[in-house]
Image (cartoon, rainbow, N blue to C red; front, side):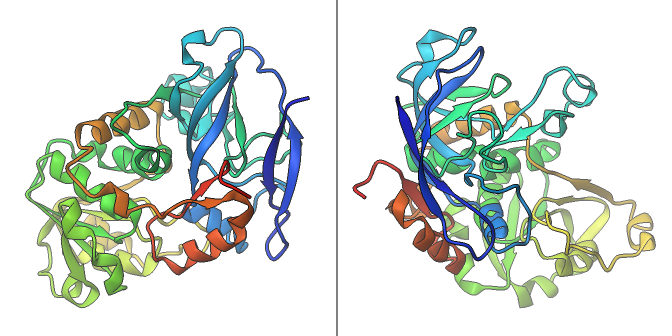
Length: 349
């Protein structure tokens, strides 16, 4: 019997359990992938410390890249052996969100990798494991040779989400501000510049996080400098830091008719100190962006291929650690020394 190695999460404060799980034959439309590299997203850290709740036991992890080892009936056999990325969610394709609203990420029957109990389906539902079994409604994208594993692993969460967040800004503009210099913010820099924005300012309260901004097309802005920006002086703001206290500042700096996208505040503590008057009198557009549609991941991978040598992508992802050192990798990720900390299940254990 073929088996996979997986790190099971049992809840905040409890140790990870390494377990062998049976690998089933893929069913109709399913794809079995052997994980080459996985990265630790901020939402994984939120689950780990109890800021968000997931069913347990579960296999965390949704940012990853791997090779297809088997496919079920209805999937192209040519995928076998391919290095691939995939959407972080599986959707039905039939409900109103999928068919009418162009929001498959809000499917009535949504399934998200890294957020499901091992009792759900095959159990191979997360990426902190040697294998993941992708469901029939999951889009799978072969990777170009120029896109390395480290470049591709975070693409199916952070990059694709920022592609979705910047889509309404595709006509370009004058000045945009991104609040937060983490991976979302850095991706936002390169995407907005590619869309023709003249200036992209990136603010952060932690000076060390601003170190890479200029290498990804943005202009670093300290928290103090951000507050000194003139009122009504920017065309667009993207919140990518998860901190609701920055919202009044973003409203202040937006010009009349400007747009504000919220991307990072995906947690229950994100209550806002905001009046309706502040939005109405400026005729502002507020837009929440959560996850993405498959086309956004596809566009993100094309973008990486076209810009493979244009930016120091290797500076974003740490050298990989073996799966057995996942607990230490979580601690390293929490310290914020890297935009992403990576895991390779096939390293010596």
